[in-house]
Image (cartoon, rainbow, N blue to C red; front, side, top):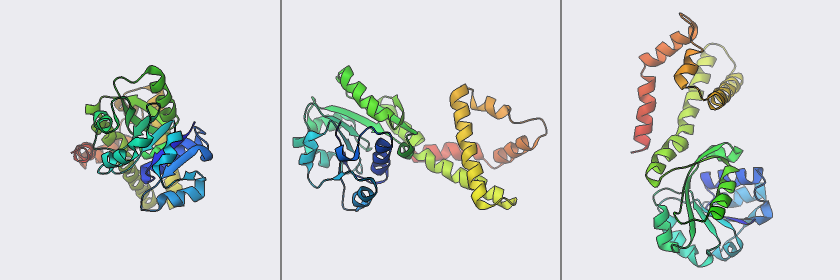
Length: 258
């Protein structure tokens, strides 16, 4: 399989690393066209993929990802259109457009997927929302799903929900990072070494997420299982509630999605 990338910024780079980690594609069959920032050149030295300057190399690609800024997507698709065939699957991971918008540029016969991933795709633990073109054959959809699932969990959603999905899955890693940093700061305040505090917090987050996924229990039930009457955990929960923790998180999602 040959895979192409247009764009190698934060998300493009994360997906490239994830695909190579999963051995979904080998470096010699991965073609990347970067922009003016130079990130593609830096990443190429690390990962060894094929760095290209022109779109014609994409003629040999089974799947092409477009991972550019939202304001550039449709213009770049116009430039790349002559090199995208009916056999190619185009997966856009940019915001600001729909599957129909892309097909209006490329043609309704082109297999288009609009997917919104998050940065954990770099370690194959991403959460990806995907919208598939309505007339996409099952075999083509299965091929696209196979590639996306090598990067993490994939949920098929409607175009109307993709924005909110992207906010929750895509923005929340930053919110979680702030929470992790705050937990570590609290541990340092209480005397724990900084490096150890980060390690403890990261492992706690990983374990808590795995427990929620495996048990499928309501988060409130999992919380109740840790909070004993009069114990230290419920005192900490009370402090979070007193300081508006829930509202801050809800408002963060609302503002990020506005």
